Length: 281
Ligand code: AMP
Ligand code: MG
Picture 1 (cartoon, helix red, strand yellow):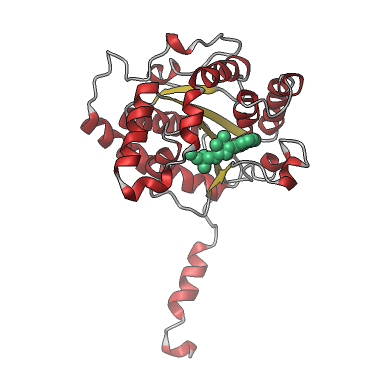
Picture 2 (cartoon, rainbow, N blue to C red):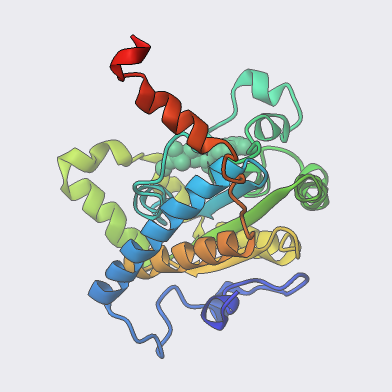
């Protein structure tokens, strides 16, 4: 991974305090909104090519996890970073309030069912991390239950890794002030009202509890095989750029091999061309 991105990777065992991190692009960042958007478009074309090769090779499995407070841009990332990639090989899994059937099982049951198969990229819009975030903040299970989950999650992700899955976990880090602006924007535009949920204000009131819960997630579940990447997300263009870069660099690192060319392509070519020749009618 290039140096520019390396700084956002949480090292295994690193203790994360969000107040030490910035939701804004770093001061030494040279791009502006326009040039960065152009860079994202360029990366998007690379992603398209890499994804097609991944799909054709049918060997690697890629899991992208998106987490972040309400309005942090999980849906926006799916729209802009993955724009134009072939929907055949890319799936999105949304994790909502669990159904009764899901609650009747262990919390990883619904998750394991939708992990990527060979050649696939699966994007988790929220994930099993909700089971140590919203579940913890709202006391949906007792502490002795959720506290065991960090280790269980690490083991689950280790299993996925050892069976050929590349895992990237992005935490979209926004400030409380930026969330306020985004919620106000949603309320100002009737076409965006569907995105507003009165419950969002209740969650917002618990901002500090969520920060604490996220700090524990980042400190306890960033591993060599499934790292957390802390993405400054107050600027949408910078957020998209960081995620695109990490994805493209990671996929490039997989050294995807296309299946070998057909040895007898020429024979098939002739066969097709001769179809129309009068003597074959
Ligand atoms: P949204 O992402 O806006 O569609 O909202 C999905 C909602 O489902 C969020 O409020 C999440 O906190 C909630 N949710 C997701 N997973 C769980 C879970 N395991 N337990 C309880 N609530 C969850
Ligand atoms: Mg929401």
